[in-house]
Image 1 (cartoon, rainbow, N blue to C red):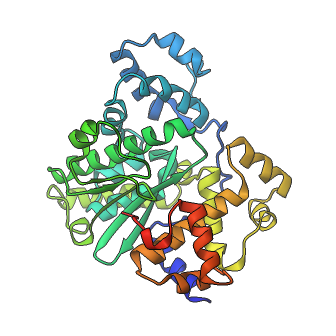
Image 2 (tube, rainbow, N blue to C red):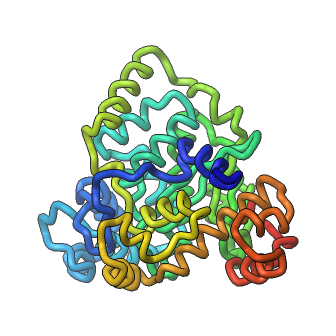
Length: 356
């Protein structure tokens, strides 16, 4: 096993990628998100913002009494709320976690510490974060949480979803810790003209023009027990987490198509993954996978480039490795070719890196 393969394998258990599961990944039009989990929350906010609920539902092609939503429908329900005010994403986020998602929420509410809660969030993202997939990295003394696409979202909604998820995690931690935790935030977009809402809901430790959307915090702090933790809480957490581990809610561990492909490409990165090998891993033909990716607004090379760029960012920015060493590990002929590819992936040279 190469050094890069060993590093990726070591990172996997923390939450960088999921183990292949028996469930077929959900797609944009898969009916997989319970109305009671996500839709009811949004309906309450839509009502408070004065939206015409029947018209709001009709625009998203959601029928009255519908039990399961597709990711496309959920995105359509979010779009009018996005236009309702600069604070909408943060308000939705604050109500999202720990949430009311059955065993997954119960396990979150009774988690022992921040690290425990984040691991649960990553493992059960199908229930807790169906539109963006959280991934967890341990980088020396820091913990890094970043997001990738679950099954595709319109570019106009990406920043909104990131703000929503960051607000959700921050609010959950504030609730469980009894105080706002010193998260540091990185955004893969330019600084907004007025970041006031980010400051109000997230604090002042904000960096824009980065290469990933991420949150980081000291690992030692993430390992400290929640102040409200006691014996009964630990017992309840063990019961809920144990039930989830034994498959009591299999849908909670389900991955979106793009998240599942990311997982596959990450583990296969040192073996030159291709469209054909990825399709075989999903049990479909290359033409079918190509068509599915097109329906999600992407293509195989774009997804492979994203994984390679994230690994390069990890090796360069968090491991401090030289461009020449990273080029060799990623299979480039020389460092010059790697630098050109890195500039194409990120828009910058490796020497100008600003990951977090």
